[in-house]
Image (cartoon, rainbow, N blue to C red):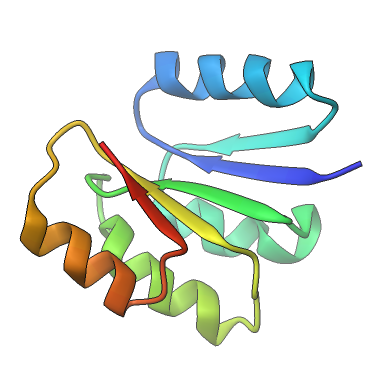
Length: 101
């Protein structure tokens, strides 16, 4: 079974992603901040991370680097409702696998 870590401060997004992930057989952990995500990496051992750009505290782009420094090589899919080209380029430069708006 795959482990999915969803990082979003919008509870409806977390709820929907959790239902979707569980529907395809994943164990899903949801957190509402980048700091919580970084703290949970060892415990949940994600195979994929879905990460919002706009988060309280540390933003998603900065979190990618912190995640990589923890030796987590899980693909990071960055999501946002406020997409722009500059953010997409920065996300990929920071190590994101994909960027979805």
